[in-house]
Image (cartoon, rainbow, N blue to C red; front, side):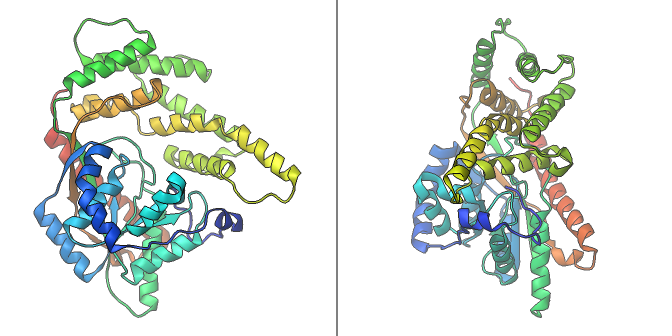
Amino acid sequence: MSYPDPEARKPKSAARRMPFRAPRPSSFVIRQCTRLLPRIMRKGYGIESVGYQDAELRRLQELIKEHRVLITPNHPTHAEPVVLFHLSRQIETDFYYLSNRESFDRYWGLFGWLLTRTGAYSILRGVPDRESFKFTRKVLAERIAPLVIFPEGEVYSQNDSLLPFQAGVFQLALLALDDMVKAGRDQPLYVQPTAIRYRFVEDMGQAIIESIQRLERQLGLPNPPPGDSYLRLRRIGDAVLTAAEKAYRLPRGDAEDLNPRIDAVRNRIVERVAESMDLEMESLGKTLPDQMRALINRVNRVVTDEEAPSSEYQERLLREESERIRPLHQDLKRLSNWVAVRDGYVAELATQERMVDTLWRLESEVLGRRILEGRRECWVRLSEPIDLREYAQTPRKSAIQSATERVERDIQTLLTEMAVHDADPPT
C-alpha cells in the first residue's frame, strides 16, 4: 500500500467508491481466532511455530503498558499480519492494524468483517485518505491501542532484505506527536522496529532440485548432469531474461552479469505502463519501488472505479478505458515479482531460504504459480524502541527522513544477523 502526503487533498470520488472501514474489535472473534491460530498458520502459511527472544517480549509488554507504540514490521510474505496477531497474543494485548482497503471486499465482504473484528482498519491506496490518516493520528495520540503499520507497503517475497520504507508512515507518527503536544501531553511515542524472518524446519534439498527440474522442462532447457544447483539456477535466470528481453524488444545481455539485464527489463516495464497510462516518468518517483507503487495505484483506480457515471456515454467510455488498462496488470505483476530481484542474492549468503526465495519468483513467472513448498518456522526480533521525541526539534522533512532510515536500518540489521546465523551451503 502507499502512504501519500497526509496533508494533501482527497478526491471525493475515492471516498464514495470505497468508504473508510473502521476497526470494531470483538473479544469473541479474537478469542476464536486465537484458538484457531496454530491451524491457520500451518494450513494457510506453512508456519509450524513462531519464536521470540523472551527479553524482547518482556520489554515490549512493559513498553505497551505505559506508552503509545507504533509497531513497524517488514513484509516479505502474506503471512506477517497473522504473525503480528500471534505477537499480540504472546503479550496479551490487542493491536490495531492498518490494511489496504481492497482486502475488506474479499469474499463478498466477509473477510472485511473479520478484519474489522480483529482490529484492522482501512487505507485507500494511491490517494490521500484523510479519514484513515485522521484515525491513525487519533489511535497514536490518544493511546487507543498499539498500532501495526507495514512501512514497505508491499509484499516483496524476499526473506533477508527490504524494500525502501515509505516516509508517510513516520510523517503520520510525527503529526500524532504534534497532536499530543497541542493537547498538553508531553509524553513519548515509541516506534518498535520489528524484524520477521522464516527458516525451513526440513531439508529442502530434494524439493529444490524438483523445482529446478520443473523450470528447466518448462523453459526447454536440456537436463544437465547432477551437480551444482546454483549454476542451474543461474542458467534458468538467463533463459527467463532472454525470453523477457525478446518480448520487450531489448538486446540480449551478458549471461555473466544478470543485474543490468534485470534493470533493463524492469525499466522497460515501467516505461511501457507509464506510456499506456499517459503518465510522465518524473511523476512516478525516483526509486523503482516508488514507481511500481505509483503505477499499481493508478491502474487500480481506473479498473476498480465504481463511481456512478452520469450518462450511458460516460459509462461506455469508462468501460472502454478499464478494458484498455486491464492487460497492464500482467506487466505490473511481473514488475512486483521482480522488484527486489538481484543477481548474487543466493551466492553472497548460501542458505536454502534464499534459494527458495529465488525459485518462488521463477515459478511465479514461468509456471504462473508457486509449487515449491516446505514447512517453516518464523522468528520475530524486536530492536530497541525509538522515542520519536528525539526528532521533534528537527526540521520536519529531515526528521521524517532520519526516522525512516533509522527504522529501516534497525530492521535490516536484525534480518542480517538472523540470516548469517542460519547460513549453510545450498544443496
